[in-house]
Amino acid sequence: MSHHSETDRTLGEKFKLWIVPLIAYIIQRFIVFTSRRVDVRREYFDAFINEKKPYLLAVWHASVLFTPILHTNRMIHAMVSASKDGDLIVGVVKYTGNKSIRGSTSRGGARALMQLVKKAREGEVTSIIPDGPRGPALTVQGGIISASQLSGVPILPFYYECTRQWISEKSWDKHRMPKPFTTFVCCYGEPIQVPRQLTPDEFETVRKNVEIALLANRQYCIDKVNELTLT
Image 1 (spheres, rainbow, N blue to C red):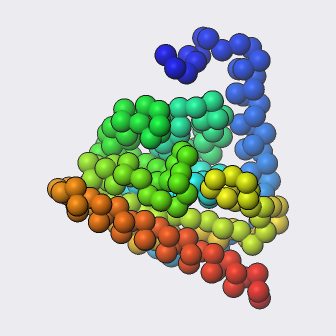
Image 2: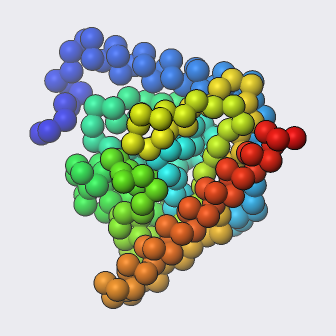
């Protein structure tokens, strides 16, 4: 087994796995509590909620940190990498009332993807980071297309940006870290239905189109933030 089972962990590791996610969650709660939230094109999201239909939430790696807390108690099954960092993320996701499926494109990917497809087919809500876990940033990998294709569940683009935030310039994804007393601009995009039958060429066309849609939603979000900061 590549990653530790519960019983292999030392007391120190268990403590870290308990305390770090708790602190991270408390900080997130504080930042969200002191901040304002503006939802853009939320009707796309609400339509799924009202009709109780599953969706596959697509979130760029740069804005994944606060996505679970911005969707508290939505029971979203998020794909989380099978790494040590992933162990900590699972804890935070759990505090927000969401769930995790372990695995990524680099580790245990195929198994995790099939698990996610199974959940989606059962009517559960799922989420994938299309450019995770290691990039290249803002490039859609094939995993999310396959997941949507195999499950028949549409992709729902999501991205947030804040009026006050730190941007991790050194990280590959230029990660966003919201500051307290900020405004979260949460943007949803039009749902994308991926056809069941695709030739390799058609698959690539769909992948590109999904990438274009996700990038457009991101740009729309950034423009909204710029409007708010200028006023």
